[in-house]
Length: 103
Length: 124
Figure 1 (tube, each protein chain N blue to C red):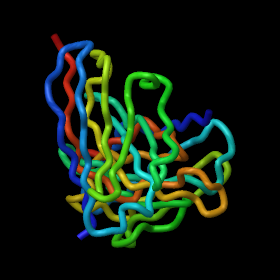
Figure 2: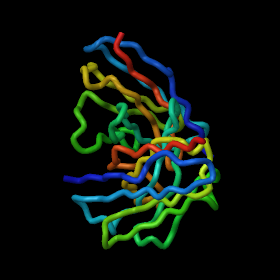
Figure 3: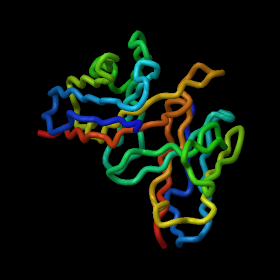
């Protein structure tokens, strides 16, 4: 079973800054990795699938990259609405999440 | 509008039962696998169960096998999670989501539509 490890656990940044989130798999899963945004009390939102494909309606400031075991979600310029928890997922496994908080 | 709405959560004693429902709208429900995912307080997301589009196949995480049953009624655009023999550790927000199966892998690729969740609290 694949284990997904996300880092850092918390990212403290200011609006306008670039956010770089990491997801490392315990074995090669390329390219089948997805990223989600989750805010308290809301439905999780699919951002990226197959490592680098933006889901429908997702702004261009969100991008995904990586292959093999190492994957990255980048938010090029944080907007107020981007402060949330982000999860990676492969098949039936989720990472533990990275919280992006306002510095 | 594509939407999933869960209901049926609440407070239940250990050993008790609860049935969650998830009603879909805005898409051809019977063409998609569906899933239940949960999030315990302060924890990450955990996959719970999948059900095939036809309802003919079901899969569960080991911790709920024999206690939870996923089912669906395509005529009612609904998927259900019957939870029996509930434990304190089942306390979580439960989300239903639409599954996209990978064209080349035949496995769960992603969950593209989610509901807002329903809270289940197991406590005496």
